[in-house]
Image 1 (cartoon, rainbow, N blue to C red):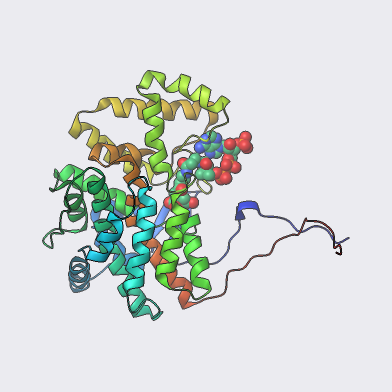
Image 2: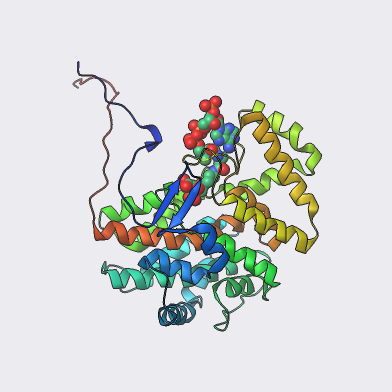
Length: 370
Ligand code: SDX
């Protein structure tokens, strides 16, 4: 018989296409968004500037930024139907399921949903960027018995997101750490949720369908759901001195330690130092050295026991916790940021499309007859 073809389980190591949007380099442990190192963007730019860069390939001019801010700020309010849909979704549902459901309605309400022109897709991308914070913030507030906080058009994206969630703009240290997390989460080449969005786009389905599918993929704890799972690990461990015994037990049970490891990075995640520095500023601001103690104890133990390094979800979890977000809100925050990367990939896939349809090697029963 012919030699069996090589199976690439999990598509590990498979280069499926080219992309001009970002470069993940495990050799140099670096990440570029349209050529710019993500550390520089996190230090110098607003999230709105990075969104424009991902969509258009260049940083916005002042007037382009004004246009983006005007449109984004004009689309921040939750419509009555979407608010009503959130209200009618039980609080026993996971916030990722509420978000996925709300995005479906936002898409269904858009008369241009089926218009796949670049301009229409760009407009949908800005609309989703503007709408996601409203859904995420309102869902957390209703679970706490708090009223909706309407958007404030005088605030930038990060400040408005925090004000809609907590009722006020927090200290600049907190706003800055949140802005850094949004920039670091925005884009990461062909990760599972982005590739999902590209597969959906490759059939010529609409951008909203691609984003709903991507939210589904991101939810899993092996992917975006890990930032929430890291917080559950911290809650399980409690204080720093329990880190080693907890890890011994967890590894003995063959558990994956959330927030550690990566399919591409093998010498550590390029984004972690920047997010860890933001976490340290939050620890200082809130006077919570205990959080950093636990963070470093578990990281050290994982390095010694498994030689596996943290990924971006590891510092992001405790950072979002210190900012005051509910643990189940952490992955929806990831969605609000990654929607920029997803939609950039949707537009790139649509611009030079080819249906994504891999092969499979059949290993079921030989042909047989009734
Ligand atoms: C994100 O792709 C992206 O870019 C994703 C992302 C993005 O920006 O989009 O970076 C965001 O999703 C980050 C990853 C978040 N996930 C987690 O933190 C969940 C825990 N991590 C693991 O499940 C794992 O590291 C993966 C899934 C992230 C990657 O796993 P791989 O590449 O499939 O590697 P593997 O599971 O085959 O692991 C290789 C070995 C195995 O040991 P052996 O079975 O060979 O003995 O390392 C072990 C694994 O058991 N291992 C772990 C581990 N990660 C790898 N063991 C314990 N805990 C872990 N976290």
